[in-house]
Every structure is written in structure tokens, then in C-alpha cells.
Length: 113
Image (cartoon, rainbow, N blue to C red; front, side):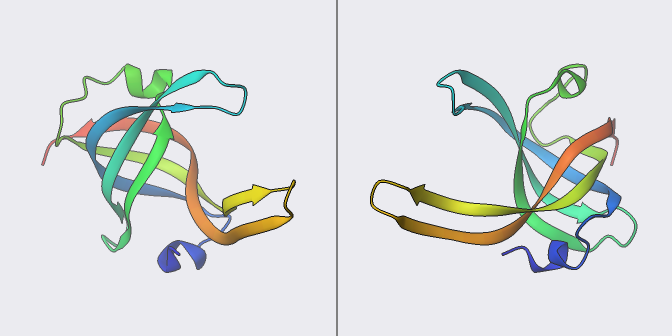
């Protein structure tokens, strides 16, 4: 669990992260969707680490930036709780736990270090 994020649930804050790579996932309807992996996420205000990595959808806001592996990004996002894990209703198995994520990234920009 991302304990540092748990204390900030519901807040919208500014973060910094390193662009690692692009990826793909298959959504619940079976369509392929491009994703972006960011690592070493820190709170831009305090410079404290909040998580080691985070995945976002590769939105138009990210597409507009000339992303190069290792470049530093700054963005604002909301801290939200979500259920992590797998639910199999056929066998009534519930292997879920509560975790925290960053959602709705905005004001995304590349910064020079």
C-alpha cells in the first residue's frame, strides 16, 4: 500500500516524476489502450517520495509533450483510493485490498533538471 498517499486522500497536489516507458493494456471491453509508466514520484511541495511508480492512460495531454526516456515531468493529480486485486464472482473469491493512486493528471509539463 502507498502509505504516504493514504494520508492525502482526496487532495489535489503537484507531483514530479520520471518518464520511464510507454505500454499497453486491454480494457474491460477487450480494446487495447496505450499507457505511460512514470517512476520515482515525489510531492513537488515537500520533495518527499510518495510511490515508486504509477501508470496513467496515454492521454492527449501526455502526447503533446516530447517524451524522452528519463525526462522529468511535473503535473497535478488527485489522490484516490481504489480496490486492488481480482474478484471472481463465479467462485465467490475476493482477493482485493485497498490501495491509493493518482488520478486525473492535469497541467502536465516537462521540466529541466
